[in-house]
Image 1 (cartoon, rainbow, N blue to C red):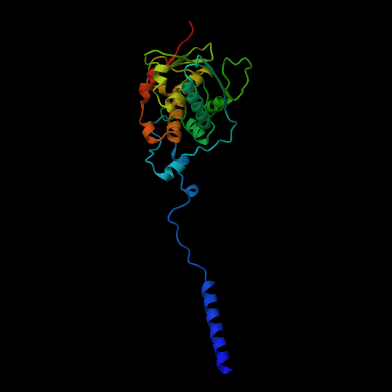
Image 2 (cartoon, rainbow, N blue to C red):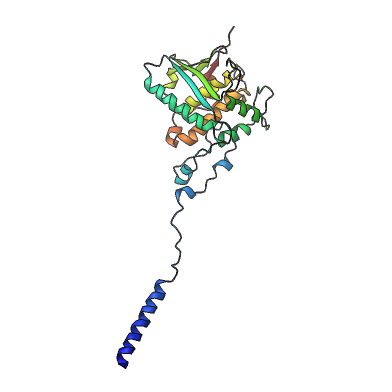
Length: 269
C-alpha cells in the first residue's frame, strides 16, 4: 500500500514538472525581415528637388519599391475630360494614352506632386518664371481648378479638358497647340517610340498653355523654369519614379535642354 502511494506521488511530481515546463513563456525570436508594409519609407522627406533627371535611383531593392506608393493629397482631386480625334487606326496608342492620363492624374492628386510644385525654385527662390505674379501655392491650386481660358463657363470644373489629335511629321516637335483651341496635336513620329513619362510630360505641358501659362518662344536659360516646362518636368520625374522601372527609365531618356526643343506653341496671327 505504501509502495503504491509512493508510485502515485512520483507520477504526480513528473506531471507537475512537465506542466511547469510547458507553461514557460517562449523566448521571442527576432524576425528575419520586417513585413512589407512596415518597411522604412523615406520618400516624402527626401523628394524636394524638381525637374531632375532621376529623383531617386531605383536599384531593384524591395524596400525602395514599397516606398513608391503615391500618397493622395487632401485637396480637391483633378479629373479628366478627353476627346480623341482621328484615332480610329491608332487603337493601341489611344489605350496607352488613356492609361498615361490615369496615372498622371494619380500624380497630380498626390502629396508628392504638391510638395514638388510648392518647392519649385528659380535662382534660389521658390517661384516659377512667367508666373503672372502668382505664388507656387496659387499655381498649384490653379492646376487643380482645371479652369481653361477657353472654358465658356469660366468656373473651375477640376478637370483636364483636352481634345487630342494626332499627326505625323519627321521634325523635332513632339506636339503643339493654338491659344484659340482646346486641341493638342501630338506627333506620332515621337509618340510611337517615346516613354510614357515623356507622353505625360508633353500632354501636361500643352495643357498648362490651355490654362493661360506661357514660356519664352526662344530657348532662353530661364525657359525651363516656366510653368509649362517646370510642371512638365515634375510630372515626368514622378511618373518615372512611381510607374516605370529603371530599365524603362533608361529608354528614350533626354535631358531637359533637349526637351526644350520639343514643344511648339503656335500663336494666332
